[in-house]
Length: 212
Image 1 (tube, rainbow, N blue to C red):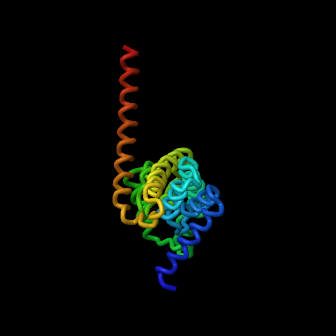
Image 2: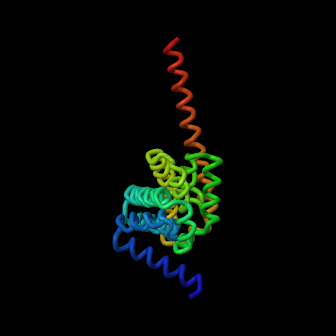
């Protein structure tokens, strides 16, 4: 079967599940998307956004269903890395289209940026699906990992849903706007980080002034 036929069948499966199950379908598919199953959020969320524009779903429910699905799938993958270990993942990962280079790349990101990459990684193509494994293998704190994962997922899913709402019936053309989405995601991330740092710095100044 040609790749285009496989992709067409996958899109049909995704849209069918969401059309029949609604928020539950989004939640289920996004669990799989975050658990090493190659189901693209770039199809799940924009189609859900289209359903929002058609009045069949609510935007807040769609974003939350997708984000909580990401959280559950990511935690499952985190514990897979924690319990199974690196060697077993490399050995059996091929059965879910997982390659050693994927793990090595995300491990390098963790070494360079620390556990905060769990947040940023949710916004990066080719990284978001695999970022949970090195978090588990590297014994990242589960609470911090969950918070970072949910926050990053919330931003990404909100952007994809909004794009689907705006595109409406043309939601399948989301790939033409992927560059804008990634840029917006990165800019949003930087803005949030700067806002947090600013408020933290202002809080420290207030404490210092109070002591004086």
